[in-house]
Length: 103
Length: 103
DNA sequence: TCGACAGTTCTATATTTCTCGAATTATCGT
DNA sequence: ACGATAATTCGAGAAATATAGAACTGTCGA
Image (cartoon, rainbow over the protein chains, first blue to last red):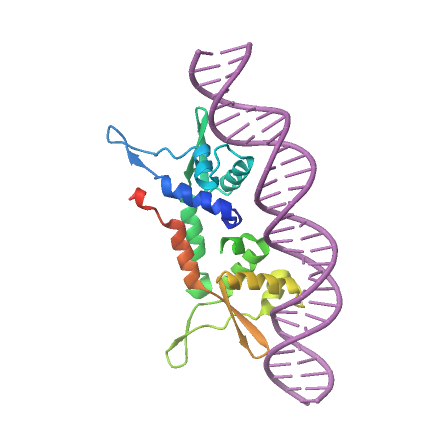
C-alpha cells in the first residue's frame, strides 16, 4: 500500500478518486446505494490531462488495485473506479497503533 | 512519507523502531520525558542482522528522517533513533479524511 | 593527540520502476 | 458479424532507487 501511494502519479489518482467517489448515496426510493465513480477515461482526463487513455494509467490503476486501495468494476464498455475506504481505514489504524511496550 | 514507507527495508526499520521506542516515560520526579530509543548500531543488528553498520542503513535512515517519520539525535558517540508519532498521526488523519462532497 | 568506535558521505554498479507505442481483449450498437 | 469505443497487456528503452565498498567526520578515552 505504501509503495502504491508512494508514486506521485498514483497519489494524484488516489486523491482525485477520493474527491469524487462518495461512498454511498440515497437512491430514488430512499435506499442507500454505492455512488457511481468516474470511468478510467475520466480519471485519465483529470489526472493526466490527456484525451486518449495511455497504458501508463492502466499500469498505475493496477498497482492501486493490487494494493487494495481502489476498486474497479465493469459497467458496459466502461470501467468504474472507486476508493476502498475499508482498506484505507485499516491502513490508518496500522499507522497509529502503539506496541505493547508502550501501554 | 508513503515513498519512504514503501521500501521493504525501511518498513522493517520503522516497525522495529515503533516496537521499541516508547513515546514517553515518567521520570524520577514524576515528569514525563521522551524515552531513549535504540542506537543506529542496534537498529542495524536487529533489522539487517549485521554487526557492522553498512552505509545502506544510513541511507534508509536519512530517507525516513527526511520524510519526518523518525527522529535522530546524537548522544555521545551514538545516534539515538525514535519515532515521530505526531507525523504519523497526521498521516493517518490524511488517509481517513473524506472530502466535502461526501458530507 | 592518537587510536578506536559510531555513523555518514561519496561514487559506481545493479536493480527496480516508470513510460511509451503497438498489438490485444472486451463490449456495445447496427 | 463488423466496426467503433474503452481499456489492458506486452516489450523495449529510460529514469529513478537501492546496494556495496572506500574514504571521511565526529566523539570519546587513554
